[in-house]
Length: 371
Image (cartoon, rainbow, N blue to C red; front, side, top):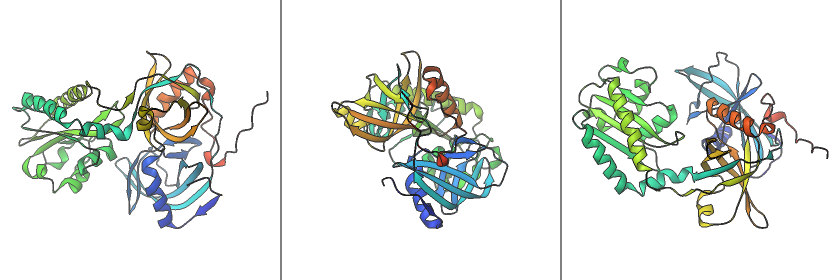
């Protein structure tokens, strides 16, 4: 899809198709109280779009934005319902117009990126290293066998039901005793959600309690999970054991170079709080990591001691005389990620911070500065 003329779409099925094709792979924002907030999309279902709530108490229509292929898409939804920190939304209107930057990017100065890897490559590379990972898992299983009889490690580039549940809710599974659904604490996936999806699993039939924690790369990308099952109830002390095991297993997994990752310091050509660009020469590593539409995980650095882990989407790749110019958009799902990124950029490139009260659908291209 290239840049298209302004248009409105009111057909619900057409809007749903746009949502299904775009929301899983691009940042989604809500414009509320004159401010943009990143939105965590939990599920795209027939009954509506399920998102993590911002904590709004009103029932006014929800306005969500994405940018894609040089266009900005404004979706208007009615609120169908909300429960347990989630909202279900029904699309009623989609407006599309050419996108324009609210503020031009500035020079990247001393900022650079390093330890860059393609998000899609993480689970794929780990699956290819399964023999070593299985041997790691065997060692830890033996250490806790008396207390936890069954320990399972799932790493795959395709989601199973349990992994999707962990990613959608961004919470661990903790079922102390399946005969007592009320025993599940509030800060874990609700038993109703858990049971409706996993009621036919063999583990649920055989064991009375379960703990499953997501395994995350750099605390940002979930690539698998660690599960503990028991024939007796488990209390919160078991959660501590499983979390400790998870940290140790992750450390051992990544103690060997298993990912396609560039270790070089790549200077940032220009940056705003919304995105940045870098110049890269063509190479084998370049072709495996910097893919158009791909998601990157990397360290954004001001120095070896001042850095922040970030995620971004490769929006465009353009050849220059000696390099490829790679344009990226920061990809944040949570307000905390946005705040951390803004604080870092404000410290090291303060002119890149824009006015977040500007509605991205109502902006016009900025005029060039007078010289």
